[in-house]
Image (cartoon, rainbow, N blue to C red; front, top):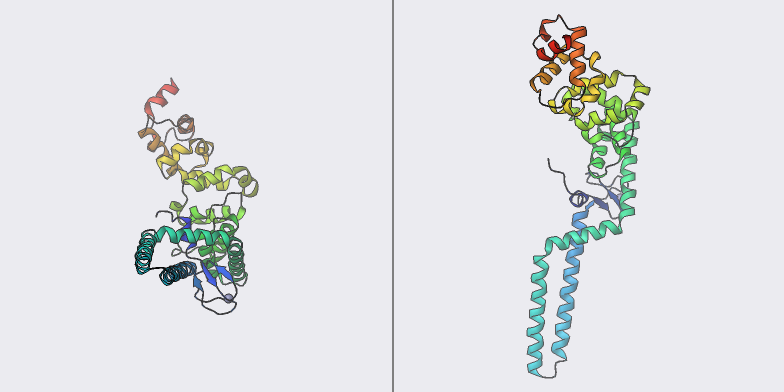
Length: 310
Ligand SMILES: [Zn+2]
């Protein structure tokens, strides 16, 4: 799905007039004062309409004054015609640029109320944390997901990961691991990613593998090599990943299950023109050492193996 521009996302903000507080959540009423929220898009529209009404009134007053103080009937008619043309021209231009004018007002409002919006999001986040502490995990998740749609922060992602881990993953939960990858090392994320790996390997994509690779020292210190082997194993799912992470896979080659190693050898063997770095050589050596008499490996790398024995 195409990424929605930020200004459209911000349109979904709601505002409680009584508390003067913004919210990113989709609740209908403010939890503090029980008043109905107003959508930011509606607030902008009403500001826009107010401006048009004020401008129209000014035109009418100015044309009226021009007519009242006109020295002759001819000047009166000239004022009326010129004023009406100017007024109509302004209206036409306003309607032609209606959409761009709306977004100009939206951007202005977002700039002016930035601090208030940040405070509102902090309040929403605090409520999600309270839900999580008190065991209302689904409510906490819903709130965090709504916040996460607007705010790209590690704090929100990690909180989501903690709640998802607590909630225990079910098949019907839409797992979106990619969206939850933080920019810094976080143990909770590693635990969650490994949990997802057990249920749905397809969710562990390129950026997640790259995360494990980038923070491999931290992961090794906290969890040992197990998670790295699991990720290397997952990387074998696609030829593209094998090519991209060839060096990483090579390091853990001897720990891979036999079936996976067969699959890897098959891909390497079928694509002799691709540059696999040291991966191919290590795979051949491993076959020679561990699977020399295994019939499933006999078809792979026949020429290279014969040359290495010569
Ligand atoms: Zn309120």
